[in-house]
Structure formats: structure tokens, C-alpha cells
Image (cartoon, rainbow, N blue to C red):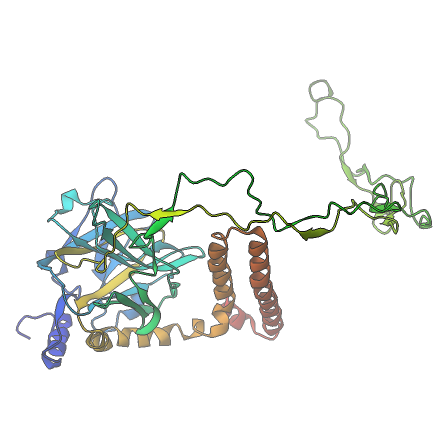
Length: 479
């Protein structure tokens, strides 16, 4: 039709019938002409190859062509310019694109970057090229997260600093086509969606680390705790003495003098004996190799009997008291927890508009992965979340539905319960790692891991019982 690629034609039809208020700042469908718009970075670092092709499980699906990562264990980079540059100043900003892991995802990134600032060419691109937003999935082992990172310019020093989302969502690492959407509102609120379902929301000013705005007051670095400051609320009672009948010398366990050696105990039998069946190797030379001895094997007579020297076991000492300690009482000199005094923060500022979406000049991928066949499609930037979702219903939805049919056997919840349980343990461990109290750490790990371990063992037991009733073909299919 008028020489317009079919994939682009569907998009034009959608835009024709869409509301006139719908503004599509950018759209990349990866059609036949994609190579005229995108620059593959190829240098000493970036040696990964790209292509636009249909996924093997979507070859018969119209419009399924997608940008695909071809190599493993290599750095990949590809960018395209925004012409004209994007200057978003008012209203919502929506960034949305599709990702599909044809072989699942074990270790690798699939996030995209928006670049701002001065124009740059492919020859000058590197991992140090400044970006405005980094958004998308990244996973390696149990470390799984959907990144949302933005660069913030310090209004005092004019230096840029990355701000990372706290507790990002987990990546769905199956083989289905997934839709990732980031919505940034003009009131500094944000929302993250996967397959048009909300997975995270928050504030640019409150939910990122390091915080956008520093504390108004900080601890005085020149204020030190006085030497006579008492911060222990309890103390040993100085008026209490150890009782006369308290014996600290008694051990916790003592030899059980009433124990009797079992009748079948073979005390004269060694635990290991020479192997009578062993023969000296034909090439053994006594002069060069020394005298040959047969190897030692476990004593066959000790299989059903105890052997070796018998010693009576130990038992709990009823007279054990342990080390005596005076009871604790309230410390009359206790002054409370000491904290340094607060002083005004010389580096304080308040930036109520931390994310600058002006002069965005390029979008691209800069990745490293050990997972091949990661595909990307339909990158869009717009100002209306609902219209972006309607757009996805004409482009992404039919791929997702077909994938669900193709991989139906792997979508059952019980197939993923075991993996999701261990992912939750991993996320819990990262939270615990930031705690400072050892007791809290121990209680948190025990309380969180024990139910998951029991649940995992129950699943394993149930699965083993079921597999006994399956045919060999069904077992192979399940594996």
C-alpha cells in the first residue's frame, strides 16, 4: 500500500483513529528501514551483533519482527537519534517498549537508555556517555530487578549523580513477550508497569538512593562523645556477691561412669584393614617405588558392629552452674544514647524538579549478556498512559497471547513456586545486608527462610509422588 511497510501501516492506521490529543513523541517499529535509523556501535569493546528478525516461535505472526541480540558474553551497543530532539516540559511522560527472552533469561540486561545533551556520534559513544534515564529488566542469577535510574544535576556543583530506585520489581524471565512501561508524572510521581499491570509506584524525591535532596541538618563532625558519658542503661548490681555454694569449676558434661560397653563391641578390631584382593601392579619397582603395601579398606567386620577402643559417653552434669554473674539493675549514671549535635548542612539544597527531560537527543541499548536471542520492539515515547496501552493492544497484545498458548505448559503457578521462593529469599538477604543489628539479621533470616524451606520440601515430596504415576513420556515433557 503506497510502498509503506505493513508494520508501519498498522501504526499509522492506529494513529489516524486515535484522539487528536494523543502525542507520539517517538516510535520505533523495527520495520524494513530500521537500518537507516539505527547505528550499531562496533569497536574494541562493543563487538556484539544485532539483527531485525522474527522470533522462532512467532515466525507465522504478522508484525513480529524485532531487534535481536545475537551473541553471548559480549558487549552490545546500538543507538538512534531523536529528530528533532525531545523537549518534554509539561504533563506526563511515558516510555514503553517490548522485550522477549527467546531462551529465557539467566544473566544479562535488557534495559534501554535515553541520552541528553550535546550531539554525539557512534564513534564517540561509550559506557561513559551520559544518559538521562535507564529503564528496563536486568537479571543475573537471583539478582533480578527492573531498573529505573535517572541522572540528577546538583544545582550547587552542577555535577551529575545517578539516582537508583529503592527495591525495584523482579524481572519476569520466561519466554513470553513482555511490555515494560514507565510513566513519570509532572508532580514527581512515577509508575512502572509490566504487561500493563502496576508493579511499582513512588516519588522521585523519596524513593531513590542517594536521595535527590540532602538533609537540611547533619551531624557536627567536630562534636565527640564525652569520655564520662554513660550510655549503658543497665549495670551489674555492685551489692550482690556470689553465693558460697556456687561452684564455677563444675564442667557442663561429665563421663557417664554407669555406662557399660556393649557386648558386641569389637574393641580389638581395627577400623581399616588391608585389602586381601589387591595385587601389586606389574610395573611396581621396589627399588624405585619403595616397598608395596596393599591399600586400606573399611573393616568388613565393622559393618554391623562397633570397632576400636571403647570409651564411656558423656552426660549432662547436674552440678554444673557456669560462671556466676551479678544480676543487672538500672544504671543510676545512665544518660541515654549520645548523638552529636546538628548543624546546618553546607551542601543543602532543595530541587523540586529533579528530572530534566529537555534536549533528549538519542535512545539506545548498551548491554552485556550471556543470554542470546533477546529481542526488542515498539519503543514509544508519549504523554498519555492510556493511549500508550491502547497502542500496545494493537502491537504487543497478540504476541503475548500467542506466547501464552505456546508456553502454556510452563505457565502453571506450581512450576514457578520453587524459583519465586528462592528469589524472595535473595531479595530478603539484600535488605538484611543493610541492617546493623546482628540479632535482627539472624531473626529475619530464620523467620523468612524457614517457611520457604518447608514449602520447598513439601513441593519436592509432592512432585516425587506424582512422578511415580507418570509415564516416561510425561516425565520427559515435564523435565
